[in-house]
Structure formats: C-alpha cells, structure tokens
Image (cartoon, rainbow, N blue to C red; front, side, top):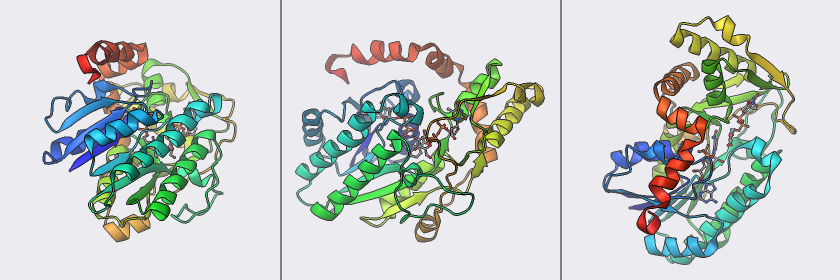
Length: 352
Ligand code: NAD
Ligand code: DAU
C-alpha cells in the first residue's frame, strides 16, 4: 500500500513512522509535513534512508499543493496526524490552528474525494483528541458518543476537523475512521508539553511551573501504545466508526510532577525533595479543563487492544530517553534543530 502519514515529523507521527516503516517494508510511507516549529527531522534520522520511506514538505492549508501531491502519490490510505497541537499557543494565536487543523483537514479530504473514485481498499484515518469533549467533573468518562464541548481554540479546531471528517463519510461515502486519544508522552515530544518540560527543567534545576492549583487531571498514555492502537484501528476497525484510545491512566498534575521529580532523582542520584522544591505555582491557563478521562472499552473489546506501558514504566523510559539523547535535547533547547532543517532539507535539490 501507499500510505500517507501527515505530520510525520511531529511527536506522535515520528513515533508512528519509526515503528511502522521498518515493520512493514511492503508498504511505502509518505511523510507530508509543513515543518513547523514542532517538527524535527532529527527524530526520523534512523529511518530516513529506508527505501519504503519518503518525505514531502507541504503546508496542508495550501489546497493546490495538497491536490497536486495527492494526485502524484495516489495513496491507498491517509493517516492524518498533522495539526497545531499546543493549547497554550492556541490561546495566544488561534489563526494557525484554524488554518492547519480546519482548512488543512478540509483540503486533505477534498483531495482524497477527488482521487478516490472507488472507495474499495481506501482509508482516511483521522487522528483526534479527547479534548473535543471538554471538561469532566470528578466522576465519569468520555465515551465515543459524548457530547462535543471544546474549551480552547485548539480543541475547537480539532472538533471542527472531526465534524468535517464525519460529514465526508456520511455525505460522500469517503471511507473514514476517527480515533480520539488522551494525553501522550514519551520520546521525541517537544518540550513545551508538561512532561518533557518538567523532566528537562528538573534536570537543569530550573523552576517547575504548575498552572493554577495543579489539581487538573489528565489521562496519560505512552506514545507507542497510541501508535499501535492507531495501526490496529486502521487494519481492523470498522469504517465510519470512532474509537477512543486511552489506558485508564488518570493522574493529577501535582502527582505527575512529583513522580517526575522522583524518577529524575532516582536516575541521577539527586534528592527528590530538592527537585520537588522547584515546583512553582503560576497563573492558570484560561479555560483550563479540569479533568479528562477516557473510556476505551470499545477499542479493547472490539479489537483486543491493551496498552503495554503503565504510567510509571512509561515515565521511567521517558526520563531515560531525555537523559540519554542530549544531542536531540540540546538542538531543540538551543533552536539549532531549525538550522539543521534548513541546512539538511531546504538546500537539497527538489526540496525532498
Ligand atoms: P506535534 O505538534 O508534535 O506535531 C504536529 C506535526 O504536524 C508537526 O510536525 C508539524 O510540522 C505538522 N503540521 C502542523 N501544521 C501543518 C500543516 N499545515 N501542514 C503540514 N504539516 C503540519 O503534534 P503531536 O503531539 O504529534 O500530535 C499529532 C496529532 O495527534 C494531532 O492531530 C493532535 O491533535 C493529536 N493528539 C495529540 C495528543 C498529544 O498528547 N500530543 C493526544 C491526542 C491527540
Ligand atoms: O488530551 C489530549 C491533548 O493533550 C492533546 O490533544 C494536545 O495536543 C496535547 O497538547 C495535550 O494537551 P494538554 O493541554 O492536556 O497538555 P499539556 O502538556 O499542555 O498540559 C498538561 C497539563 O499540565 C494541563 O492540565 C496543563 C498543565 N501544565 C502544562 C504546562 C505546559 C502545567 O501545569 N504547566 C505547564 O508548564
């Protein structure tokens, strides 16, 4: 199969490609990415010379470019990870989120509709988030049919894209599937997100900024468990269906930060208390959702998916990864990864 992976230079997309490209040499994976600040081609160095992998720089918000590229590739499947993904950035500047997440998804759907005259063997798998459901009270879980109630410009843009994907399935018969996943963590995550930010700040002895009272709850899933679930749904999930992905891994932010301090302390020989003293409570995020918790029983019973990592085992791996990959970390922290992209990508003939 020819499989387009959008956003493959981002955190989850890169983890997905790193798993699937070597595992399925019979398929060709086309990574379509704009290379925003969140993209990092260093994360793909191990697979960039695989014969069944290619990279194509494109902004999904540019419809002509998307149409031309999809006509050229003529994919069997599209798995759509690309998005602006950080809630705080969406509060400071929502415009990019509308362009990439709403217009970008629309352009991709239109391009698929144009080339897929027969839907047999085709699939558009849309990657979404539990944030579209808004905030939970102290009890209960999001299920696939929970009401959409997004709070941030980010989650509103993801909700809009989910609705478009569903509408293209119902109206045009486009072969679609959607998955809504909880918070991911693991290697190659850009250190603006809670877990890598806290790990690196703890390692560097910098303040650990916790929003509000730190009692907000997120449901954490190790990134490769998400990737495996997506592949399983692509292979065996039912067309037109939505699947929630999550490992029943709820944690309060205060607890997450405490566990990170303990893990960093254990792996560096420092005192956990010293690191915990770096916690600094800061002004809360506007519209900060209080609690997310996902019920993934549909995925578990229908397709037999189970997460391999617990929160603790995933955190141990993640701390070890950030400590052991100083080049990646230093290039991201210094901004040099952008120059690396310019040197290694922009100057290649043809741009690929
Ligand atoms: P990320 O920000 O790390 O990566 C996003 C990638 O998309 C980047 O490589 C970026 O360059 C690319 N991109 C952005 N706009 C683009 C455009 N207009 N055209 C082409 N490429 C573009 O994001 P992530 O954390 O890997 O998230 C991937 C997907 O998973 C997103 O759709 C996100 O909503 C969803 N998701 C994320 C989480 C999480 O915890 N990170 C949880 C559930 C769902
Ligand atoms: O639930 C899935 C979503 O998880 C994805 O759709 C998003 O793309 C992804 O960014 C993530 O969103 P969150 O807003 O939950 O993740 P973030 O890492 O930004 O924040 C996690 C929690 O930690 C949240 O309650 C805010 C808090 N926080 C975050 C940062 C960056 C802090 O207290 N301090 C911080 O510095």
